[in-house]
Every structure is written in C-alpha cells, then in structure tokens.
Length: 316
Image (tube, rainbow, N blue to C red; front, side, top):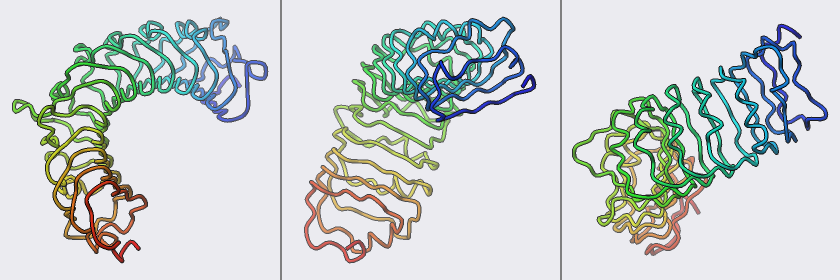
C-alpha cells in the first residue's frame, strides 16, 4: 500500500496490539483512528519522513506519553485529540506551526493558553471541557484568521470585552460559556466585522451591572444557535433575536430575569427547534398560536415564569 493517501479505521475496536503504522505509508496524508481502544502509537520509529496532514485520534485512551511523538509530524494541519486522557500544559503542540484545526476538547489540559498564540495559521481551536486557567491572552488577537473558537467549560477568569474580536472577519463560531469570565459587549467604539453562526455566552456574567441583552446581536443575521443562559439579563423578551436570524434553530435564554410578555414573530418560523426561556419573569398567557409560529419546535421550556391561563391548543 505504498500509494495509500487516506486511511480511516474509525470505531474498529483496534489497539496498539492489533494495529501498527507501516514504514511504506510514505504518501499517507490523512489517518483516522478515532473511536478505538488505543493507549499508544509510536511515530518515532518511522525512519522515513512522514508528510501527514490530518490525524484524528479522538475517543481513545491516549495520555501524555504519545505527545512527544508529534515532533516528527511538523506538516500536520488538522489534529483531533478530543475525548482522551491527556493532561498537563500545551508545550508539546507549539512546534506544529502548520496547524489549521486543533481539537483538544474534553481532556484535562491545564494552565495558560498563551502558547497557542504562536499558531499563526490556526482557523479552528476547540479547547472546551478542560482545566485551562488565567485570562484570555491578548496575544490571541494575532490569530485573527480564526473561524471557530471554543473555550467553554474551563476556568478562564477576569474581565473580557467582545470588542477583542472586532477584526476577526472570518469568525463564525464563538463559545466562552461556563468559565469565570465577566464579559462586556456594550462597547460603543466597536462594531463586529463578523457574522456568527454559533454564539455561546452561557454563565458569562454578561454586561454587569446592567444585565442588558447584547446590542451587537442586532447586527447578526446568520445565527443558528444562541446561548445567553444564566446571565441575570433584564428587559423584555428579545423577539428580535428570532426575527433577525432566519436560520435560528436553538435559542436558550434560561435562568435570567427577563420580564414582560412573550411576543412571537408575526409569521411562521420553520427553523426554530429548541426554545428555552425557563426561570425568568415573563408573564401573561402563552400565545395561542405558538405551535403554528414554530411548527418544527421539538423542545419548549417555559417553566418557572409568571405565565397564567391554559396551555395553548396549538401545542396541547
């Protein structure tokens, strides 16, 4: 198989005893061993240079012992190590300067992420579900080609303004949820140059002390998922978040302090799949036409509000 360029063995129950990397795979560009039982792989034994561009090792049992092997894989552009047993700092990745997509989700990496600022070609960086700490480093602004940044579920802290991303023209996916950040969005001097498709700001202490719904979202029209839950947001239900985004599928405004009545769009909204406004202070009756306005709705949560009256016939 000296001409082999791509090999995918996802979910085949393999481990280091039943699979070994072959010396003659010198033309291999992409290797996917995700969803197996590996604990180790030895790239160091390869005598010939290996021009591998994609390596997918997610959902195995790898730990830090494999990281030193990546020093021979300097041409890597895509590396997925999510759902493994890695821990420690990120020094082992810093020589992989050609990386465009890096996924370290759901491991136990910790410490600062400042070293990632050296990845000048990075387009997608997924770090969710780790133990990273400290502030989001200012040098990350050097990575302005980022299209996806997911830092959710770590221990980042401190004040952070979304104006940081003002010049990230290609940014499509941003998630800062579930850290210890205090995020400000109301900076009158910035206007987003991006159009997001996913925004996660759950539990981000948004816009303290005012608790206002981010105004920059009035300029966003491509969002399919919005999570602003657990932020003590105040004001009336922001119907404009729905009407601004014709492809919106998920809207989570739960655990805030929104008031007033639930105002629906005046026309049918086919895309909305999940609507969660639980644990707010919205009042009045549930609109009788809610099932007609949102005919594709699979999940609706309105508990712990101040609604009254009967359940609408359109969803009963």
